[in-house]
Length: 315
Image 1 (tube, rainbow, N blue to C red):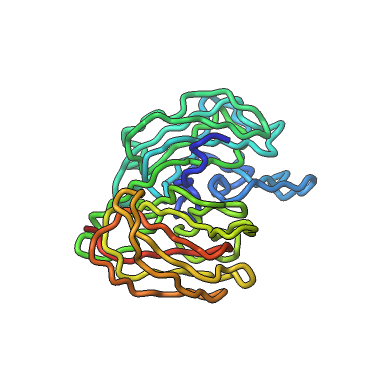
Image 2 (cartoon, rainbow, N blue to C red):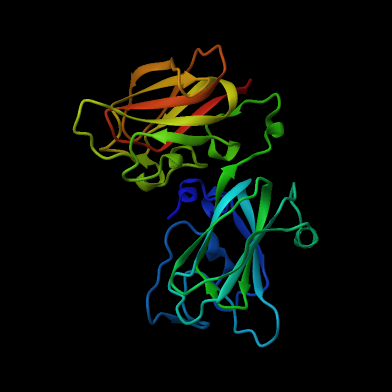
């Protein structure tokens, strides 16, 4: 593990990522590359294409060249690190891999992507079987797509593309938006406790299907309370806060409060300490008048939140 893995996986399927093309997927489908969670495996499970793998696997090449897959990032942004995971591929992993990226706005076709200008993020590197390989990236450009090159063939279980979300907020000019949404560029920058699950889950797209898809802390045994800090998509005025405890039936917080800040250091009240109910989405109107760039969400004393939505306008 390295520091960049704390950042969102821009390619993750649940964040809107898609493996839009691959030159070959004879043994196992390309879509597995960006599935959430660790790869699974059960020995001696054979289908009509051989042993079933939770990953992308190509045929044995008998000609020069290498295999590749193109991923549209669900959340375009600046890539800080890449993980290439060959879990369970022991006799059929590729000896080398590389990753490239490009920036093409809108909804390009495969032909348009193939003719785009690609930049190398991970040079051709040695990889081994049944292992995670971590590569830090030093490139400040914003990208929309990545291409994984598997050299020459074999199987890769997962591709993780960690980075900072950089959305195109011009779409929201004159409109309201969720200032706390991960997909709009918000990020959890500090958190008191993330024992059970990541705090960035609370600002992820969609609804949480179960407890693990939200943020949940350990049980406190002192007089304090848990909290997280969200750096908003941009300085803005918040009009409506949604605090969702869906799926948290016996471990929801008893109450919540919100504070705002322009610098992440000096805080002022946005929502006083307010009672919460388990397994419910709560909506609170805020009487905020000045823009803030950070919001601190305090839960009392501990527990979890499925989602946090802070609707308003960019300043």
